[in-house]
Image (cartoon, rainbow, N blue to C red):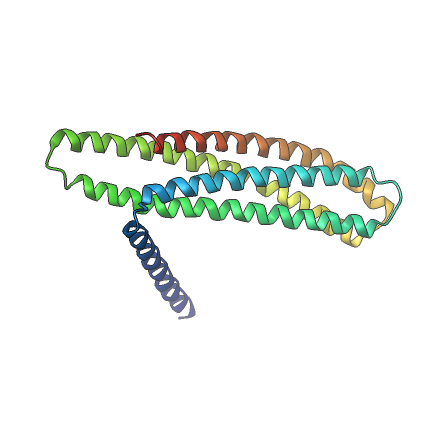
Length: 216
């Protein structure tokens, strides 16, 4: 019974969120900002979030490099820096996820509206051209989202390593902890390189999609 109530509550929440989004898009259209414009803005925002996440993860790698070269001083201070870097990286990853989800939300509304409006054409040639444009846009959109999610998946192993390092250092504030973390550095270095590579591909895909949306 509890599961049933939870499912009903979730359904109401989803319906409520959907209604809120619909109201938002309608309000924006009244002031001349259409779903296509919103999608463009959100793709650009996601691209920025990915670029910022790249820098956070690179910084985390540099921080670990500094730590394993640590030679004297207060390890508690080093733990604080590592911990802050992990939290910053996690926040950046969460922001990327949020931006991707916002793109998916508006894309669904945009493509549904576009498909509905195609059926309103009386001119066969214009209808055919609009259908072709929709298919092209959808194809490039799905390639973009796939690329974004692939890059996103590469953040997980990096975050896992950063969290492990943070926890280990928290409970082992001594010189032997530095030696233990040295082996983690190469793994993190490799994972960050893969992450940066995939994010660069996704950012490039974003730029192509933005250029397509901006075509006259």
